[in-house]
Length: 171
Image (cartoon, helix red, strand yellow):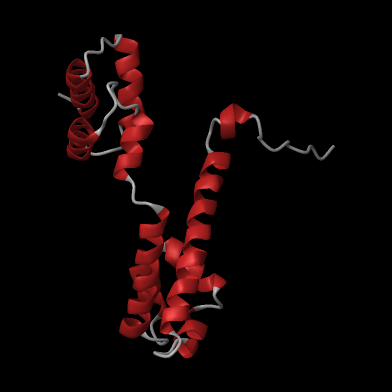
């Protein structure tokens, strides 16, 4: 059984729980929308929805995705903590290792704050709480911007291409 077939079987099983009859095309649409998520994570998300949801209808793929994603607040706190840990662990002499540890989103925040060397030189125990709060807020903005950018850059365009920028010809 392929992953897509296993996802379809999972969706069908949960549709039966909710008393819904789904056409094969609808099951395929749900499965394709969730195909990039590991099967065990999907199974856990559907089981969680069954135990906790007050809704009498089967969750849509977007609702399953949302249940698996961390909130921007949680991600922002994690990014701020990771940056502080990287400053303490790697210091200003190892920006490459710090970047590898932090990942691209957190590194973008480091650059927005003046760069690695600047952060290492200016973050102290006295200003650490304020620094973490500022990084958390900046992280939330960067994370939201990444989501917006993905929507605009998607192959179908944002909102079915309604806001796709015009291509200017050089004729």
